[in-house]
Image (tube, rainbow, N blue to C red):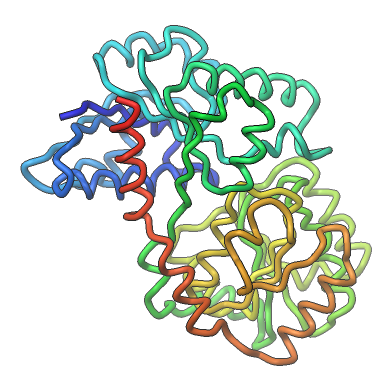
Length: 367
């Protein structure tokens, strides 16, 4: 049996946290079927216990938890690292993000690189952080036994960035939680009051500049009957988009929410007229797959992995072509059509269980 230590330092915040948590839960659920691994979760013990992490697997398997109460990109997380590593003993580590420790790395580990947006997209981050990310990613990839990516698009970018380590790259697509395959729950009352029976487009994900959400303001300005719900973590420069919305007279048709639990997201996907996802770069694009699984039409950019994930099941637009997005949204609203069976089935075939099976194979290979 292979001992595996799974880095879950940040199980609740951000899209990467959703991916890491879902992958860990699916991997834990497969332990009884595989019989190959002994799992330890390393992260904030109180949060992991609140998530019921110890019950993610069935008897006779058990899950150990090592308290590592720090978030992503945290230099403070380096301080207790030697103690955490010692408690995990000789485990094979899985880091679901490239912010691996800077010193005393495990003898064997697998790291996941979701995308290289910070390195390639102007305005995605500050120059100092881009400099740090470039070196941190090289550090993580150089010492890894295997490097996991969620898409062919990221695989190509990473192979170009670190060609000497291209042989380590393994693709593991992300999954859609099973809840999104069931009928959606009703919208909360405050969102119903906001929509007032009018159609709304939905955007899910962090509000970083490369998400290109400013295009949404232009769409609202051209389609007066439309509302827009934005759900995701706030980042600097979002205030500039809101200022633009106020000057354009459309801010009152926007509802901006913090990151939501999956049940609330499910309700929004089910009620939205469309998912609006104009990102300039994406390593996978999980909201696109989740919306498709709910039968919700998707209007997204043709950047990064999005054509790979959506296939022919979305209207793809150049992220720089605002008018193309306006026409695409108008077309969806005019037809009122939902996703067809083929597109729903395409998304529902992307399961976390399949991702966990692939991860198990990669970990065994690395061990």
